[in-house]
Image 1 (cartoon, helix red, strand yellow):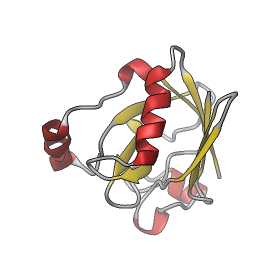
Image 2 (spheres, helix red, strand yellow):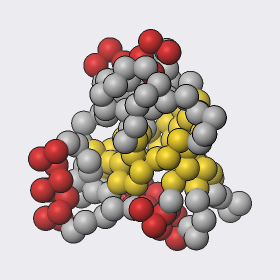
Image 3 (cartoon, rainbow, N blue to C red):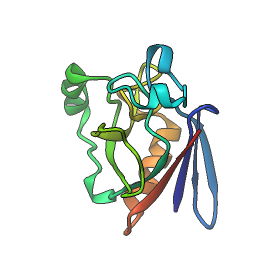
Image 4 (spheres, rainbow, N blue to C red):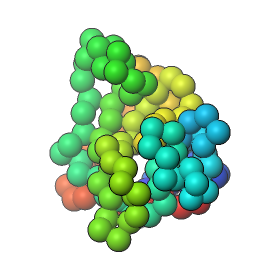
Amino acid sequence: MKIIFSISNKSLNLTTPCLSILTKATSGRDSCLNNASIACQIKPFEGPLPVGNYYIKPSELSNPNFVGDVLRRTKGDWGDWRVRLHPSIETKVYGRDNFFLHGGDLEGSAGCIDIGGGVMGSTMTDKILDYITSSKVKILVEVIE
């Protein structure tokens, strides 16, 4: 399984040997929303997820019940579930950290990949959730301009 997130195309593509799922995705906020320029990638809490390679550990996925989803929203637009994105050693993150793949109600994020779906999730976010949770190995996430 592999995930490719294109900042400027606003898309996330999850591929397995059997299928490919394409969905809208956003990263960054304000003037840096889906802006892959280095000037934006270096901005903490505003820039998009820096271009490079990351990986997901499926065991780190957080998917609380509805009450947990609502309580977590007091700290940000997290959506139904989230999972940490770990940068590969060769990926330049410009001193930034705490990157996640997650849902949300509002487009954009403070540097994560936001796939929408709101606090209840959607058919698409549920499909992606199912594939992540079914994986027994780390999942490669490639972030491109």
